[in-house]
Image (cartoon, helix red, strand yellow):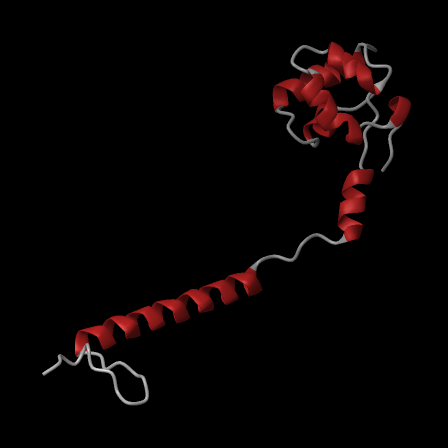
Length: 127
């Protein structure tokens, strides 16, 4: 006699023993939980920023000739020490054009490239 796990009915369904049915149910339950989790995560995720918000963020530029430490600090990747050094250089009149920020210790080409979109042309602020 064949065991129930090897029997095939006339219509093509394989009979399963109780342990096999239990593991299949667990797999179905795990799949259902995964789908539910993905669906909920997609609904709870914050919406992407609107084009207006992106445009406003890009339009925020500072005047390098007179920016305060707080204004420098608002730019991406600048900590308090570099922001203060840039504000001090501006107070001393060392920053006449945006590219002059590379004269400040700690500001190199990578920082310049990251900050360039946030610096007004020829020391001009736009808000």
